[in-house]
Each structure stands twice: as C-alpha cells, then as structure tokens.
Amino acid sequence: MRVCILGIGLSSLTLAKALVNQNIYVDLYYPKKKNLPDKSRTIGVSKSNIDFFNNSILNVDKIAWKLKKIEIFSDNWTKEKLINFENNGNQLFSIIHNYKLFEILEKNLSKNKYFKKINSKKNPNILKNYNLIINTDSTNPITKKYFSRKILKEYNSIAYTTLIRHEKIHNDVAVQIFTKRGPLAFLPISEKETSVVYSLHNTNNQKNINVNDLIRKYNHKYKIKKINDSSSFELKSFSLRSYYHDKILAFGDLLHRIHPLAGQGFNMTIRDIKIINDLIKNKIDLGLPLDSSINSEFEKILKHNNYIFSSGIDLIHEFFNLERKTKSTILTKSVKLLGENTLVNKMFTKIADRGITF
Image (cartoon, helix red, strand yellow):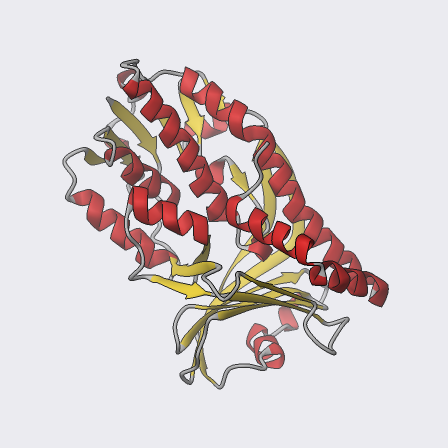
C-alpha cells in the first residue's frame, strides 16, 4: 500500500505519521522552497485530540503545555469574567509551538522506512503512480484546477501573533478578551512564556496601531520582560465545495480554515485524520486496494459536520462583533447567563473537545 501526500506542513506530516504507523508507504512531495513554521505561532489541541495524538501518532507530552481553564472577558463587561470553561480541575487542552511539532514529526518520519520525502520539481508526472493522492498544498496546479471553488468569508481583520516572556508564574489558565478592536488571546506555553494572538479589525488608522502597546494595556496577569517581534496574516474562513476529485483528496488548511478565536483549526484537521485513518485501515483489514471510494466516504462523513462546526465558530465571532459595535450590555449579560448555566457550559466544552458529530 502506497499513498502520495502533496505539500509539507503540520497537517501533511501528522497524516503521514498516522499512516506509516499502519505500515503504509507514504511518499511526501514538497516544493523546492519549503516554508518553515513561524516561531511565533502556536496551536491549541483539545484533550481528546492530544490523547489520540499520543496513542495513534506520536507522543507529544514533552512539547505540550497543559491548560486547565479558559477565562473569557469583554470590554463591555469589565466587572468580572464573562465565562469560565474548565474540566473539574483536569486538563482542558494543550498549547504547542508550531515549529516544535513540525521538527519532532519530521525527525521521526526521516527514520521510518515507510516514509519518503521527494522534491516535487523532479517528479512532474506523479499522479499515475498512485491510487490515492492527498493534497495539502494550496499553491500547486492541482489545487488551482480542481479545488478553487469554496464558500469564503473574509473578516476584514489581521491576526498578529507573538510570544511574551515574563516572570515565572503558575501558568495554566488561558485568557480570551473580546476587546473593542477584536479578540485577544493569551495562551500559556510555559511558566515563563505565553503566546499571544490578537485579531485586529481593519480601520483607517491601522498603521498607527501599536500591537505591543495594546497587549500591555490588556495584560493584567504577567510581569512582562520582553515581547518578541510579531508576525501577521489576513483572516478568512472557507470550506471547499468539493472535498475530492477522482482519486485526489483535499486536506488540512486547503480543505477548511476557520477564525482562530477558539483555537479549533488544527483540531478539525486531527479529527479529519482520525476518519481517514479509520477508512484506510478498514480497507486494509478487508484486503481491498486503496481507491477513490475512500475520498467519497470521507466527504460523506465529514462535509456537513465540518461546515456546521465552522459556521458555529463564525457565529461566535459575529455575536461578539455585534456586541463590540453596539456596546450592548444586554448581549454581554446574556452571554454571562449562558456561561453560568452548567449544562450549556458542559455542552460547549464537549463540542470544543470532540467537535460535532451527527
């Protein structure tokens, strides 16, 4: 059994590791100039996905910082926190440096006999050599030809990511603040380091905004020693209208992208990996070849669930965007009341951990 993966990144490397663990040969094609992960970026991984990662892909406990609580605040309600998400004092989710996960996956795969990394420039006619091709590369000709139709939403916002270094602290609580300019997240990554993601709405005076000053303004927890240089990217969400073309399956950030306010982007991809991993395993167990039926089953299982989940994240964004624009304390109080309802709180915590299934 041999699978082709196009593109190199966290999604493709994680999928490759899951497949070689099943003794499936994987050829990963990467462009001549590969983009290394931004060292200012981190990912949040839910408890159930960390468990899956550790048991079925690779143990990442050494690079994962465990968090037990998420506290939500708003500029419209400065009296106290709006919502408090926790799991009876147990681990809620983990934060991982993008580059550390990339490095540990790449290093592990390089030693695996089932894995081969190939420069795509040397192999222009690869499609005929495989029965199953998984495409994670948004820049290749295949994407432009087959995977350009999507449901797209642009947020007119820029996300700034950085790391702050601070005095040592018991650092296991994440903080999300819905500010007047957009959502700001403080995501602990160690006792002395915290990742920051600030999604700023575009304004006429955007060039005059100092992100570091805003971080200091809303920081009420850390004694900051240094704020690293930030990187930025334009915010948009999308879902492909078609998940596959014949034997080619779109995957990872090529397949779907969501607003980072809930830290669910990579979690969606891990859930996708669980499904495709099971579909391939079932084929092997039955002695059947890998073919395009895997792609159609994958789309059938996940397309509606992923779209509903993405729409839910977008709804949260739009709600707080409305709250920001109207400065309505009625909306803010309604969120607080919902958050105080134990059943509602547990439901949202479960969805964030495991996604949506029907």
